[in-house]
Length: 463
Image 1 (cartoon, rainbow, N blue to C red):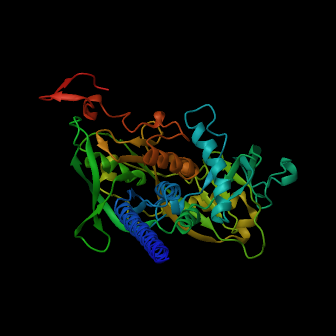
Image 2 (cartoon, rainbow, N blue to C red):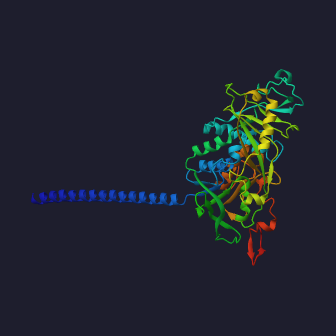
Image 3 (tube, rainbow, N blue to C red):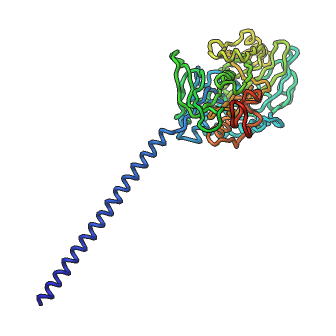
């Protein structure tokens, strides 16, 4: 009996010991899991912190519609990217704030710019809705020959259903250039600001770029330099400043040719600035609506004009094609001539000529019209009238998107998207950029080699 009692007691003790051991093992296991979880969390926080410090930094030089479009699409495609616009005066302060904003989908058909016309035209309609851009609309376009006398040509006499009621003065024949299915308009100033409002993470700094900062590449490619930042002078201080960057996009309109000197002759960017006057007429108080038909007018020897007339949704009428343009050389543009809005002024003689020509065409505006403002801006024109779009040779992280001639506003969405793809993915799938190579005017010797060198001599394949 005693033996049995001891045996039962031992069994109960053994059971309690085993239970306690099991509980201890479980507690240790839970503790290990807790420690692992805390370590994983710490490692994840450390990884996130490192990632935030290694964000890609993209600096766009130029705050016009082209530069802003590049910044917009980069930020939209990569929300974690730090995107900065460096703008000398203010966003949309030059041609993007003073241009007409006309676009035509089919007007580049058969040329290398056809893809830019098509893609951008289709994108504008989508973006206008996305950005709540009220100034975008499709509208018909007429070709108008100037009249030869003071005799009035009426709407009934021309028989064109698109003739606006305000085109009631001394004009010649009328023909239709577009019925409004592939022609449209936007007020570029509104569009630029709408893009920035949609992507508030984009930072805008006021200053003028003076050069790029680079470091040597670590691989065997001796000529390749890596972009690490830019140098600039602030608008509020003459002290030189620096801005870190992994990628730099030169998109400063006609002044982009200054980049020739920033990149040690790796690219030559011949550019001519065409400085032209434009005017804007107020909405007449006597009407609630101004008929929306754009006009492309023939050469009028009486006034030396070939007016382009764009009624806008706010009731104003924008007019360019005034004549008397000035042609600014590459060297003048490199010096920053006419960049300041106080030096890029309208020609009063051309303002008067355009006003007289328009009043002759429109009895209504002759009696009710009032000029709102006159202004001038430049369009950037490379020798072949094609833009510079692509990588700068011999530099990693250097790009250019400039020289879009009179179609810069119309092409902006397509150019911005294409350049963002090139920057983020290494290749544009939206637009074939080959016809717009930035090196097409650069002698091969100036571009530098991409292969191995021995004492300056090419060795092996120079791919």
